Image (cartoon, rainbow, N blue to C red; front, top):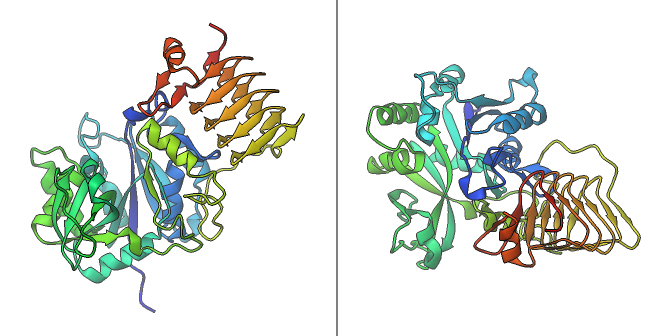
Length: 407
């Protein structure tokens, strides 16, 4: 038998997530709850573990307590087989400074690579929603003999100016890496599409260490996409991996190429709406490629006094007591009282909705209480007067622990 290559996976989970405020007021972006029972980081970790890449370091920095706790308690692997998922807080090994960028985060953590001595290093982001068999991308990287492989997703060329764009030749070699170009290049086989970078990379380990060391000595932003990848492109040693080529077991035609960056409130809300239709854009119920997490131990959801839920996800411990829920996602232990209406909303853990309350296009963080008769998301001027956040797309966000009574 041919020995399997040694692979170390590094998940970059240190971002502040400023555009997701107030959901990131006291938690790191990858720790933000998603889909009722998950955290954002569960999606990348599930992809890696399902791909049998089970030596994983999660680099954390900002407000990392809940993220470190979630990873430590949920993602416990078999040490007998040498597997692990471990959070690695910023350690200031190279002096009294925090990470200066994504490349600097890895450079300051080179001890992880030196200790593991892998052949290849997988570097993925921590806060996107998708399924991916990373083993297929790894094999493409190994077969190429190149130093760097960047995952690219096809986007309409008319929308490509919002992304970091990969200009690749017919053979997949990257010719240039462009940050939000005004005139994005089309694909050789599809001129009206462009490759957007997914922020997921695979490197030959020695080449990565050499590139990080050189970058650390230079005056750059120390960014993986902005500095390290262009360096490999300049030497002709980088290729794109087309996400469309990735075959995940159990994927539907509808969600096969699904990838969502949930970096804004509107994108976060839209991604939840993608979960709840009869044929969802992203299917959480794919048992062939499950998304793993620590499931809350509570009784099943209960519907009493003619309470209803339509086109919604309602998780354990919820009680719909005569209220109506439509096109929404309810995390554990949510209570919706009689005559209340919840529409196109995301309710996180332990939320309580009083009688006759109305919620439309809202996101309620944990432990929020909405008193009887209070309306949220109906009148944006009233929401702003309460000090709530209203996104450009009209989504009202209620921060953790808020109590909304009558003004």
